[in-house]
Amino acid sequence: MNLRALAERIGLHKLNSLTKYPSIATYHALGERGRLREERNRQFSSGARVVVTEKVDGTNTRVVLLPSTGEYLIGSREEWLHARGDLVANPALGIVEAVRAAAERAASALSGRDGLVAIYGEVYGAKVCAASKDYTAGDLSLVGFRLFDAWTSPLDSLIDRVDRATPEQLAAWREDGAQPWLDETALGALADEMGVERTPRVEAGAPPDSVADTWEWLQRTLPRSLATLSAAASGRPEGVVVRSADRAVIAKIRYEDYQRTVR
Image (cartoon, rainbow, N blue to C red):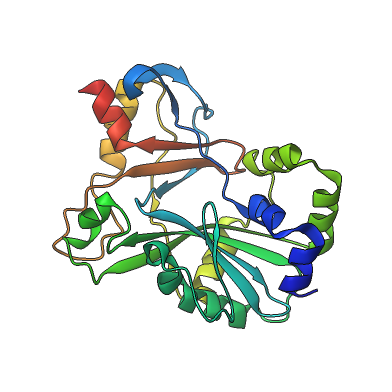
């Protein structure tokens, strides 16, 4: 099945919904005026093994690829921007320009495999967002792409899921993180095949319970961004994403939330 046939079979809007990246909850609950409460949205077991990655401040980007045909779609979190072979690409935030070469390498490296591969990364720098200067020192020629997640699935199972699910059920499946995600080893291999870097991995244990202790933990864990594009950049980090080893628990911990609350 090629990309056009898949889009006609399940609907391009459902393929869009199916492959959006799920929302990630804040570790502590947000209260009035954006201040954090001691209540936690997510809880990590004491001493649990976790994967901690830098949360790069850019725009969420996805590449949805059919390796068997070499076709792909590039999109922001909310909409499609480009398909392989399009004469004109949507220039929004420079996403397609930043990602297309990596998508081509992925299509070549994965050629002939079955199923669908959904690849997620962050485009940052240039004029992507207000925080870009923290990575570029204001150099608008600098733009980066960091891979942070991916999943793959046989087409038959995805088509069956779409056929059986209402739009609300499909969105719930996506937001529950039920996709067949790649593990760290497979994700690293995919990054190598695409010729891109992953979001930086940070050596750290699970975050503590309280807001104040988590603020101290965050400052120790990631005092400066590991994803800067210029040596002159300030390197002010956005924060981290923490995942349990089995992905059952995922939370984001952002500097601005804890600064607003603790200070």
